[in-house]
Length: 295
Image (cartoon, rainbow, N blue to C red):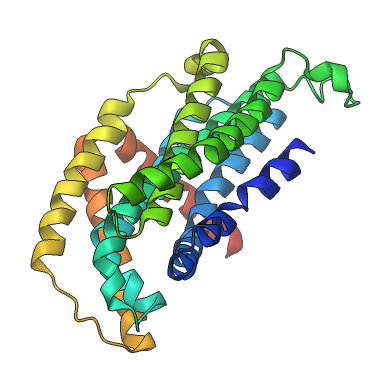
């Protein structure tokens, strides 16, 4: 019930943008809505981890965390460094918005990575606790003081911060003369809400979740991400795709940008992180085993 209520309130963002009279920004906001769809794959990975924790309490949580972060970050990097290509594909008649949307999309992409991390942590909290299903019957009192309750309360915290900060931030960016002030305000409030919700979850679950992770995100995630970002910045400065108002050409360019981003990010991860190399080897063995079973 809390989840349904939270999602209903979150859907007010487009309404708030329209109320502020930024009607042209409402259409652009739905560009970000369309770009958000690929992030659902990282959410699927988080749900798989949750299911396996419930079933077996397995220990591969850190590898799953890296997969979620790698997937969400690869998507975000493609949006950040090749944003004009995605704008040309979704809004070919509005090339003038590509430059003003660059900063909002970059912050929005970062917020989505943080959101993926939030969802993963929330699923881990529920998969570790299991208090709500341990007795075979779900009762309200089973949630009191549980990680399950805190995981859902974090969603409420997100919604409160999101809605409370949205209007002040929109006013702030409008007074600062930001061109797409309404979108920038909503995106900034989303990032802030994700950060607060993550801090809430982490403080409540650190003692029980940290032993499950037990890895070095600085070496396995941050270092490859920084290296890939530098390489992609150089590549996007050198490789210039023509912005042709053709759905087939723009789709091919978007696909090329995604492949290039994924390849650079994978190469950086394999070069820097031993855990990434082990993860790739494990995925290759699993794929080989699956193919043998099929054939």
